[in-house]
Every structure is written in C-alpha cells, then in structure tokens.
Length: 124
Image (cartoon, rainbow, N blue to C red; front, side, top):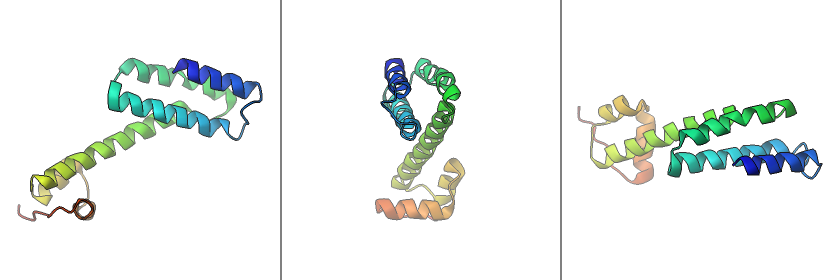
C-alpha cells in the first residue's frame, strides 16, 4: 500500500500525473485498499497505515484519506445492515423487528423485499 501511494505521489510530483487527476486517483487507491481490507483482511494495522497516509496528502491540498476511510466505513455499515435486512426478510421476520435492528424505514425494507423478490411479514 505504501509503495503504491509513494509511487503515485512521485509520479504526480514529476508531472506525470496531472493535478486534476491526482486526487481522484488517490481516492480510488484508498477506496480499493479499504474495500480489500474490510472484505478480506480486517486488519487494524492497515487501517492505521491508511490513516497515516493522510499526512502525505494534506500538504498537497488534496482531499484527506480519512474522509475516504470514513465514507468506506459508513458504506460498509449500510451494506451490512442491508445484508441483515435481506436475511431477516428471507427468515420471514416481522417488518417491525427488521426496522428495530437495522433502523431502516418501512419503505426502505419494502424496496429491499421487492428488489430481492421477498414477501413482507407485517405481523408483530
């Protein structure tokens, strides 16, 4: 990870990566790394390393890595809740219980049920 970021930074500094393309490129690198870490590795050291990279980017005036880490973390939470809601729908759990555990609105759960072709259980 460090090697990729350092090389990208070096290419930017040498003018081989434009100022306009550099921030989105870094965002992609961070999001991909964060996704791989969350889905396959779950390593707090990698997250710490990604957070430390924040100091590399700040002097360049580009967007901070922490923002992308936070976005990735939030997206991961939403995806986890979605998976939980779908599993609960498959298990025919009452919609009130799904709302309680996922904090999704009834409309969001209805949309998930429709998306996955699942029936809603309106009992309490």
